[in-house]
Amino acid sequence: MDNDIQPRSILKKSNSKKSTIKENSNQKLAEYHAGIIQRRKEFESQILQSIETLMEYPLAHSPFDASCPSPVDIANFKRLAQIFRPNDYDDLILERNINEHCGYTLCPNKRHRENCTGKYRLMGTGGKAKDFKVVEVDQLEKWCSLQCAKRALYVRIQLSEVPVWERKEKVEGTVTIDLLDEPRNISSSILERIIDLKIDLEDSRCKAIEPERRTVKKDSTKSSVAELSEIQVHEVNVDGKNETIPTIPNPSYEAHLKLEGHVSKFRPSAKGPIMYKHGFEVN
Image (tube, rainbow, N blue to C red):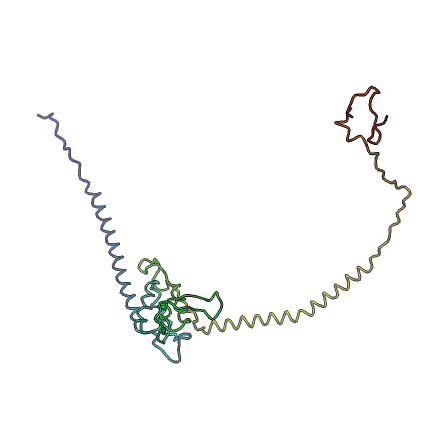
C-alpha cells in the first residue's frame, strides 16, 4: 500500500561530530599533561647534575676564599642554582657535608666538628642575654664558621618555592641571586666615588655660602633692633572724675523665706502678718 506509514526508529541518533570534538580535547589534555611530566623529568635531571657539579666547588682556591670567591665560580654558581628550590639547596648542603665540605658552596674549607657527644650546644653564654641560644650540634657542623652559615642561608632565602617546570617565565633570569659579601665591580665603585665627589662639592658650597648668610642675618637683626628702638611708649592719663563706683544692690534678707516670690507664714497670728527685717521677726 502506497499510503502506509513507515516505522520510525526509537534509538537515538549517534552524534559523531560531538564525540569527535570531545576525543580531540581529551587528546590535547593528555598531551599537555604528558608535556608537563616530560618537562619535570628534564629539569629534575638538570637539578641533580647541578648538585653533582656544585658538590666539588669552589674550583678556584688560593688566593680566593669564601669572603672573596672567584668571579668565574660566582657566575657558574648563580647560573646552576637559579633553578633550585630551597629543598634542592638543602640537598646540596647535605651532599657537601657527606664529603666533609663546608655547606656554603663557595667555601673551600672543611666543615666544623664539635668535640662533644650531646645533641645541643649553648651559644652566646659569654655575652648578653639576648644572644643566648640553644642550637643543635648537627646545625653547627654543617659549616666551617657562623659567617659561612649566614652566607649560605642568605642564598637560600632568595630561591623560589615554585618548581622550575611550573614557572611561567623563562628559565634564564627567573631568580636573581646575590651573595652576602659579593665583591664590588669597577662600575659600582666608580659610581660611588662620583657620588662622594658630588657630596663634597655640595658641602664646600654650603661652607662658602654660610658666612654670607650669617652677615645677612646679622644685618637684618640690627635693622630690626633699630626699628624696635624707635618705638615710643606714652602713658595715657585717665581722668577719674566721671567714674562711678559700682555698688552692690541691697541684699534681700527674706530670700530664704520666699518660695516662688511668696513669703510663707510659719504660724497664724492675730496681730496680722508677721514682718521681717534683716531676716528676723519684728514685733
